[in-house]
Image 1 (cartoon, one colour):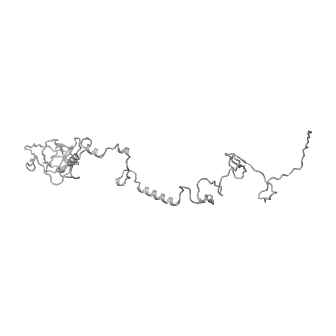
Image 2 (cartoon, rainbow, N blue to C red; image 1 turned 90 degrees about the vertical axis):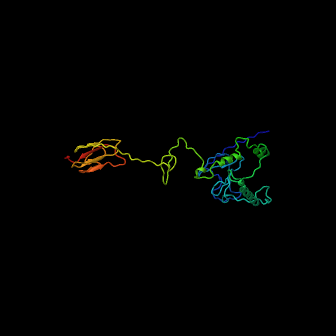
Image 3 (tube, helix red, strand yellow; image 1 turned 135 degrees about the vertical axis):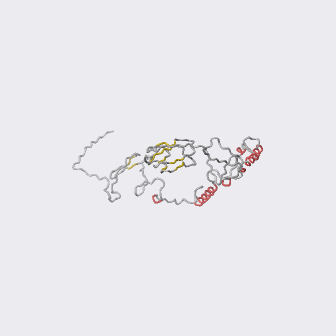
Length: 310
């Protein structure tokens, strides 16, 4: 076999060449003439996002198909349940006919279900303890019934259990309580004892009070005797323009009288240090004064004359 070799000399082109690739934007497409370029994409789930005016490659799936998301005309991606105005209209296939699959919801079944729920709601009581008429009747299981004490057994044991009060005991206790609430007469009231540390209780009384000694009313009168003195002590004190003591303090004093036998005004005071501006009573010449009662003043009584006594 003969081997042939052929040398290919390179061809140099000067002046540049123009190779048509693709078509201009908005050009008319001519079958068999217009040039198309093959396109490709990138399989990458973390492609960076583009901004306005940037170019980019298509995103493809691992099976070389275009990765497409359904979007609205405004570019909003259609994900999850949406309003009808934002949803893609669909049409049931021509071979889709009734009956629907078993258990499928229909208008009639929905009405029946609503009626059943309304009936259940009307039979469900509110939470918490309620009267028998407002409660749901229940039936205990056979296992629970075997652990309960029959009512007849409880009746038979009343009277032998220390923690259960008999009807006769309750009746006896009820008879010892007042028949009605509120203030009653002593015979119809419950007796009580005031505690040893009870503070003072205010008491009011209206009407006429009868106060007398002894335990029998209106039998022994009260004896009232005026305390008087059978003796008197007389004294004369010379007049003076300075405060002079007439009587000292005396808790047993029963009375006192004064007579001004001078020609000067006498200033008498219940207290200490009498003066013409600080006094209890003023006695002109030949005037008489008696300490008022019934509660006699027992303190010191000084006096002073308005001018030099004659």
